[in-house]
Length: 163
Image (cartoon, rainbow, N blue to C red; front, side, top):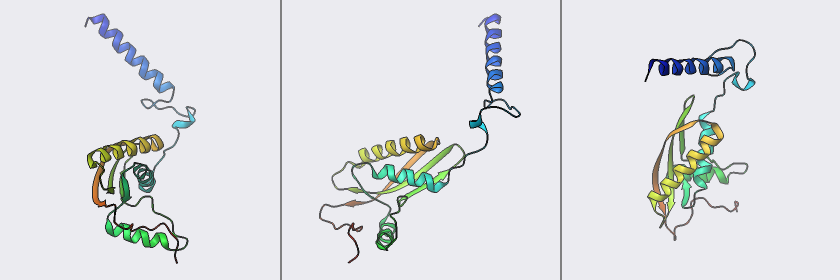
């Protein structure tokens, strides 16, 4: 690159950074004014990300349930208690930082479904939902398949009411 080209590039970079600074961008600090969206800090709780991820994972065809056997059993009991609510975050663990999150999911798959394809679909759906709703970057989605739901097995989580 010639000397003129280098000077022109450095001038452009200085202009870009000074424009960002005057507009309240990340590279500069302004006192007073600036865009209202840049004032303050937003924090997102782990539980929020866990709920979003749990709902997104359950939306994928082939996912029978979330969580391991013991968690599903306790969840089924809690769901049957009058006034109890279904835990959408069961089987999901999130670690949330300032700009990134990592997720661990435990799922039960339906028999006959390709686990590799299902895991890919779950990852894609979870990443899309979490990033769209929170603005956080999802750095990893670890999936543990804890069981396979056979066609002739009874559901551990009955949908009916107490009798």
